Length: 136
Image 1 (cartoon, rainbow, N blue to C red):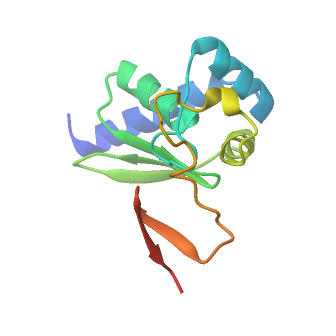
Image 2: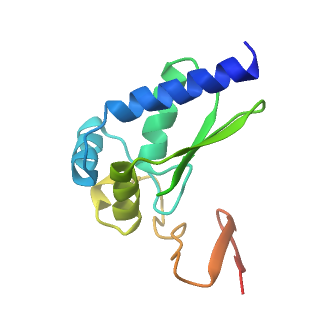
Image 3: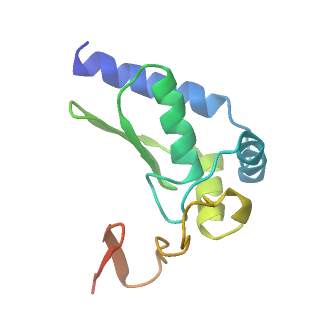
């Protein structure tokens, strides 16, 4: 398949995955707890929502990496990269998860779940997980 076909398939898979989720952050957290979906605090590539969408898109046969933040969902592969707006209820979930409101969704394998957390109001930015530099 060509890159354009893959992009369309990936976007459609994300839309289907999003459509299957509840309409509030708290309901999404409850669903993820029931399904055993966990993630890492402050990780756009490994939060529960990114893990859910990555698994969903992969099960549709679409090869891409997914990252999620409160404003956009990024689909990326060797052949393409595309951003789509994060629906408000998913942004609410991501914000609440990163604020520690769903501790039951923090990956138990993460030996220090707060090590990857970034206070977006601070003057520090994450360049790569575990590598922090002063943005000032």
